[in-house]
Length: 233
Ligand SMILES: [Zn+2]
Image 1 (cartoon, rainbow, N blue to C red):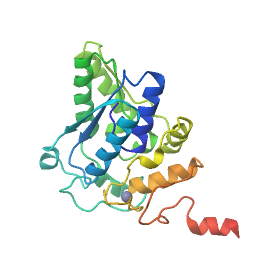
Image 2: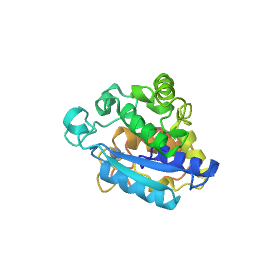
Image 3: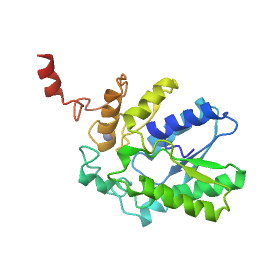
Image 4: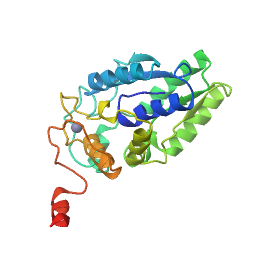
């Protein structure tokens, strides 16, 4: 399982351990120089320990030197707003899933593990091209040819929304509050970046309590606080 430390891949880890056993599952986390790398990696380590899964953190320190993205430590400030806003293209790390999946496939083939799971989901599709089903399908063909069918790349959440993933997490008693989403990587979740907005919206739509500590818990809340107030009135 490619484990970022966020909600989607965290629930995916829980699902993998649920379907198999913790001994059969490995977790790989990539530190590619994102602003929130320390936060994500800490969450990933915690989740791997919790699920008693062997875990490796792979550092890719060359990525910020070669790739341009506002998600990276050398990029501009992370934009605020909804995750479907075209401005969020600035947070794309070009071909990131291709890079990570390539390493994960090589690792899986080395260990004789037949499947690599990544947590991309329907909400990623508008902005992130390497999360879309056509990318997964095309990449999977390359994986099949490049490993002589030893390994398959799977994205079990690719047709699900983040709210549906959160619900699965709740069914699996997964500790959603221990995952990290915020692209800014501060002490608390900022509450205003795309992934914070998406996290709030997903938990709200799923009807689950949101125990995340946000600097701005109101921004982007779904439904908008004014509309909720009107309904209450
Ligand atoms: Zn944030």
